[in-house]
Image (cartoon, rainbow, N blue to C red; front, side):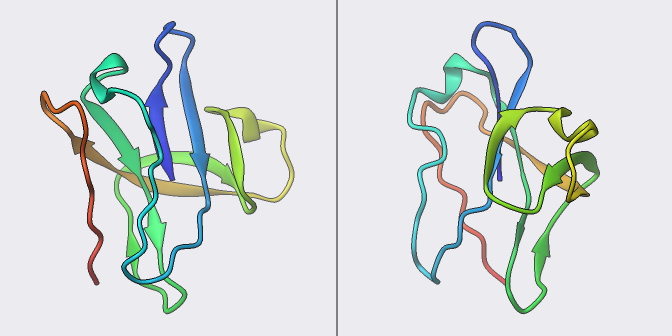
Length: 100
């Protein structure tokens, strides 16, 4: 899952649920990262139950999505997940590698 603050200041956009094979990559935000800020948030899980989670809770749907934060307050079939924060510092692009 990827979080990015919208450049127009209109809130937070959330997007997620990609299924990736081991070694596969996914570009989740294709623009200069500094256009939206230095902090991004993510959650990931494997089919075997390993998770990369954290203390930043948000509600997300069970299926693929691209919506504004807190949309699921009224949406069915959602769950609360804890996200990890990543500080990209002053980088214009950033790669996050998840390893079990």
